[in-house]
Length: 249
Image (cartoon, rainbow, N blue to C red; front, side):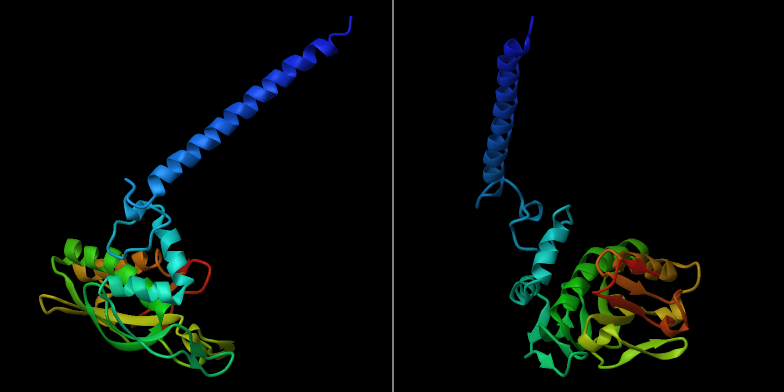
């Protein structure tokens, strides 16, 4: 006897049950998402992927998404910096040629909790630097050195030049040619101590431990990081770059 005609209604009912369950799950998910993400909902902003990045907020799994959105929009990037008290005076974009120039240009002089000697750079570099200062540099200074960082010292961001290597100048253009990098040489603490990579990187003391910790932490916020252990050209600074594939040395 052929059981096929009897099986078809059973299969049909089973398929309808599965589809009904999936529809109900999707509907419940959409309702829950609306409840959580709606304006005034219970989800804190730093857990809500639809909200603007707040530099001082705790880092969560959605922080990276919020930051990427700000990095893709210069106006949003400037708003995020302004909300955190970062002084990034706007300047008109610099257009030199296809190799050199600055989009989202400004003069950076104050980070969320410390000062800098003024540097011409792009908003993306300023935002990544602010996140690093807030979530890596200051916590490390408090925990390792028992003091806040009052100032971060740097030796430049924008420089229309080709890449320098231990073999001389290469044909490729440097990331500095579009202000996609900044070179950090050290910090000045609130208690008056001055730390530099050139004199404090090596050793077993807290100063070296602090510098190595903030070097490692910079790799979470920049896409390419080079420090004193990379080569002699970087003996006195961290090269923090927006572009790259996650290289950290």
